[in-house]
Length: 392
Ligand SMILES: NC(=O)c1ccc[n+]([C@@H]2O[C@H](COP(=O)([O-])OP(=O)(O)OC[C@H]3O[C@@H](n4cnc5c(N)ncnc54)[C@H](O)[C@@H]3O)[C@@H](O)[C@H]2O)c1
Ligand SMILES: N[C@@H](CCO)C(=O)O
Image 1 (cartoon, rainbow, N blue to C red):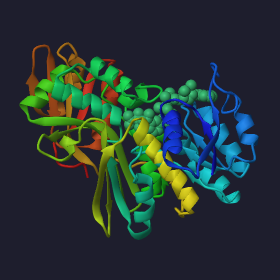
Image 2: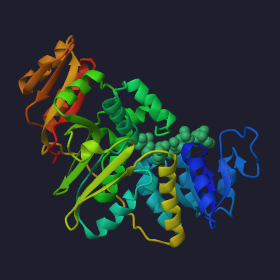
Image 3: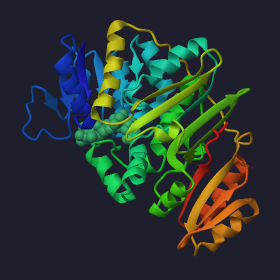
């Protein structure tokens, strides 16, 4: 196998290292970089077309965060009869059907194992188990960076900014870290999982998505007193062809397994009608975990394993069937938020200069209406699904 490696950042350099140290039958022939900076022109180039035109290269690995260029590379490579392995998630979310068609027409493979759970065998598991099971639910703390930040804040008592910086140094973050902390990256991974598990596609903006960017140390004071642990979770379920989904911080009782998924680990879960519940836990972000995911794809292509990808059907979302309790924290000066939530209150807690309101059981639909009204007030708040019973 001869590889054209697009990108030489965290993942690109990790893939290069792994191939050279472990695989004699795979060769990286050329690497795309933004600037040569003294590197050898025998191996590096700034011209993606030089790689795409090279007939010796049979497989392209995409490890750049630039979505437009990644899309161009993927389509062009597939049309030229090259296999494509993408670490870029956005292009999978937005163009999977097109890539599947192009790959089938040109008798090559399009693979993307590292896009969810980095090196964990998640995509493969969903595809294989989906042949035997009707999968009714997928869920997980899909983002290693936010899990790491929440874990550091809880266990080491450091503040959000410091934990964010540490996750950057450890290279867990997306090229744009806002995608990690606002839930966008989790949503992308949920959408990819839904396409494989349910064969349904929901447009990203339709999935209610809340992140951890507004969490504060005072929230951790509340969690500690109530023996709760926050995790940024994604959930999707399907019942009679109706799909519900949400990405939101969720508060689990400290003793539960989900509360104890540490550091940059992901816990990825699915429920199938034959197998029941399956969970996979392991490093979900970082140079070597993601490179491991890319290598899984390359080996699968070399071995000719056949994962059959089918074209997902576009559907709208129906959130009426989910009911739960929810958590809101905001400054005491944010009286507009308090007024909006008052009819739904289960408990109110007052701390030094802030309020925590937990709601009674309400439908997710109602909660989303409340959130939209609260967002209109332009006031800062933190929102979470409250309580350790699973959303279902
Ligand atoms: N970091 C992770 O743990 C992880 C895991 C799975 C998937 N991914 C995905 O892999 C991709 C790469 O992530 P990363 O962490 O390696 O990012 P990175 O920022 O470390 O590296 C990206 C590299 O691509 C280069 N690049 C960007 N646009 C380019 C262009 N047009 N031409 C040439 N080079 C270009 C950048 O200069 C940089 O060196 C992203 O799409 C990310 O979402 C990352
Ligand atoms: N930034 C991503 C990388 C893995 O996709 C995360 O933290 O999960």
